[in-house]
Length: 423
Image 1 (spheres, rainbow, N blue to C red):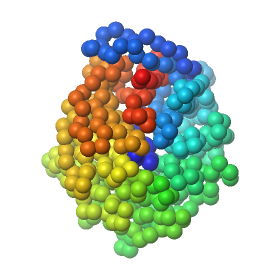
Image 2 (cartoon, rainbow, N blue to C red):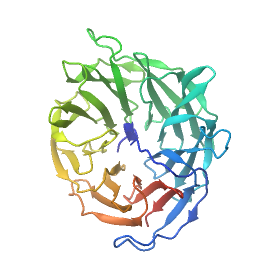
Image 3 (cartoon, rainbow, N blue to C red):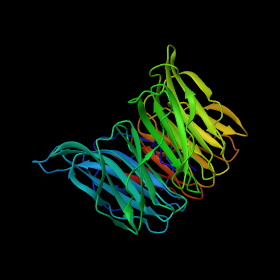
Image 4 (cartoon, rainbow, N blue to C red):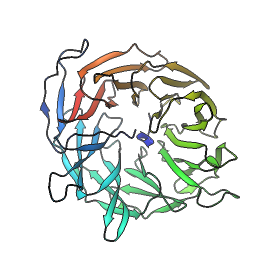
């Protein structure tokens, strides 16, 4: 199970347009036109109409799911401002009513994480006018109630990340960059956000100002694994109870630039996988490195000339240390018994990847007409054949898995934000 959601981005960064704001659970019948769609689709509307983007989801081991999105206000005087909305799914009661998290602002880069108690933390960046600055803001969902948004910091220079804490020491932790520092803050039910502290990632002989994107995850014991991109290398550091170990170089480049979009997944047992891309003359290389709980193993090249764009790498690590990676719209890698193997997914668009605590894995994607397709496996099984889940619906579905492996889909279109609950 991947502890941080995105891969990346954690958590997957998906940009959707022309979708919803607030709303309740309203059944909608399927739209005709799909190719052999399954019968009796249980599709509910979880957000209303409105120009929407930054749709994100997160889930916990109990099957709770949170969906968060941004929607522009319909106020004609403040048309450039927007709101952040959220809805929460519980396996017994289903989706609730959408709730407003932040109103009348200019938020962007929204990310979310949910812990095993069903509490959640949302983080975003927001442009402020007086003074002109970018604020890093967060809001917590605790015991079914959204807390007031808080400012963590100003002028972050990398995409902020949030990861749920399975140890229970915090609900979640947030990390971001300011100048050439990586900063971290944990949110607790009692006490709120902690005072930001610096994550030590400096290496002797490395010039200042070279820090790029960061990614991190937390294992079941509360240990934090951080991976950071610089102009010269990919480096990692692991911390336990606020005490940080030595910085490791995962991949050294010996030149300026050459690396982009690192992603990290951390399993509950502390094993981790970092995946990244390198630009070469023949295209884009896809690399992975595995952390076995003690040290980082040598990087492995999975594809030498991939066609991969931003946010198209996704990785998950299971409770047994097995891992799965998808990139582009056609390829997947699996790590078992110390060996990486690759397969062709035959998806027609970049899929969204999910894994649950029982090591069930599923990818979903939208075909050319917008119908949603899926492939899955569990444990050491091979990938299933592609299965159509819906008739034409969307271009960017997201998926989370229940403890029994059944998928719950979320997507947005010009009519709202929707969810498919599989029986």
